[in-house]
Length: 294
Image (cartoon, rainbow, N blue to C red; front, side):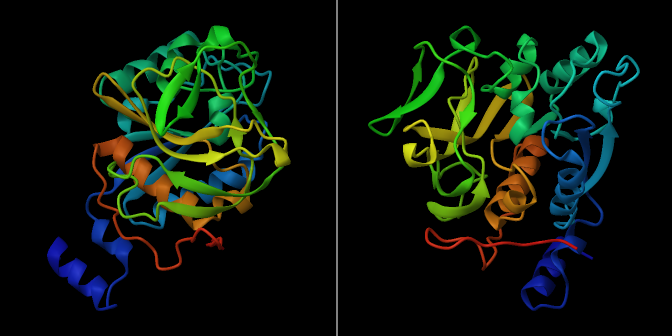
């Protein structure tokens, strides 16, 4: 079936979207096994979010538990179009660290989900890949804060901790770069379901492009700053999509989280976004929208 015929069938309701991509699925490797968040719950949901598009085929690489030997945890990154990290735990072996960095620099895609930006404060190349991170002793030596002044992104090198968040709550996500393929066609503002709004992230911030932000309200014990939440980076021939959203199932069931993750993963893998359809139930500035998977 040609792509054009399939697209016409989708429009007429005779064919579901996933079948369009049956012949050219992108290979995704999901990393998990350690996290201070409940990866046992969120990893299966991440797989469903991605595979529901029909664009991706996902496999998992699950590390040994915290404190155990990681020397044999050596995923074959080069076998995949994109690697999605739901990992925050013990430092990998030097061989595995070098393999991931070389994979991305050589043209591979990498996606960082929520607490994966807490990982590896002591690994300089990882912090280059993700641009900004939090916790793990990060501070001004780790790199600047990203701040927004008069509508422009600026780097703030003042002293202070790296990484914090207030109480979980719903908050409005605002597009900062509507020209990027990941954000194109999405509402400029939408209400995200209850989540941890990461703030005060710090890092090298090299080659960093901010796609969307949210205000971290002091009323929720936030920073009082507009904070970057969706980001992209390019390293050599590779691409990174970084989403600070996605604390738990509630946050990941947000249609806004799902759409931006799907688009960001495709962009990291290919440099393009073909998943351009905006669901009719996409959240508005006043109302959240949830899509749960059985």
